[in-house]
Length: 410
Image (cartoon, rainbow, N blue to C red; front, side, top):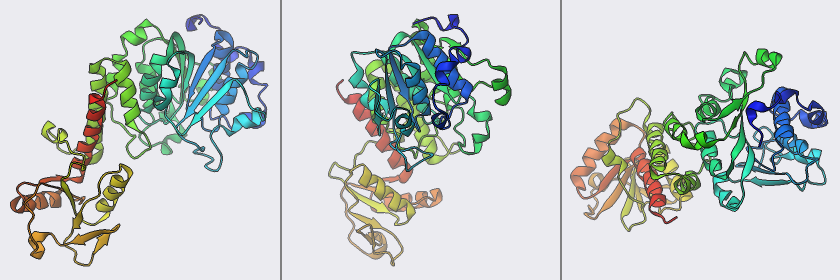
């Protein structure tokens, strides 16, 4: 692979190749035309054999990549998108633009949808990519996790391109609230020679910022990759999305030293605790983080509170295939059941029999003051029960998932 510093400025190199893409296809590209020309020029000069694209959407950039290698049948593109339909065109499949450009299909291209790269990376054990484009969720730390999972599969001198480096200064700030630094954080943290578009009008249009950049992998990238792991402690904004951390944790555990895997695990837990309790709440001590339970160990589980938090947690139990609670306690006598689970007054209120067995009681109430009062009340009547709030349950369950991966054999 050519040294990125020795290339002609990519956005001015062989523009006629890029311009051969029909306008009706180009219009779907979510990149500025200078950025697309930049990628085209990089590919035309470096001539990579195996290209990896993480994040596809309509497929506008996919068309740029395929078009740039169309005269080199030995070159291939592998595209991966966690979605199956386009976020801007939910009625259309991911990469629908490619069908417009190549209605008969393209033998140089393989598309994976509905999966994260970490879920399929084992399929590429005997291969390495020498060019990679990362343009995924723009929610920290998704791009950083994409990079860490892809890095072991990149050639020693591979080039990695990141898009939307300056999303935080654009009009789209209102569309992507509080997530606009994700790509820039990752790109700026990676050590390696870097190159960005230098077109004057492009920079003026973008308030002086480059929205796309390329970095070339080197020995220093691996030597200083700890920088990326350190940056993972920066506040996350992925909770509530469809990100599955299990395959990501497994991939990082497999390819990186234990201390770096520990950094990812700790950053995950820390940010999860903040997302549940808020950034200005009291720090949760390690004794709470180390609370291990799976609700599958024969211990009777009871929810206290039949409101919105109860319904949310029941949905979470169903999604994770956990044993549902035996019953739900609530002081409102008018509620008799939630999702088919019986609701009754707490036994110490309704005069029922007190069970002295080992119970797990999850207080499904959002008001922290009320949770503290209920905890104190329950501890008097059920000294052997483990009583936790909803937030503590989530922390414990997530930590247990991480620990199960840590304990698993490679």
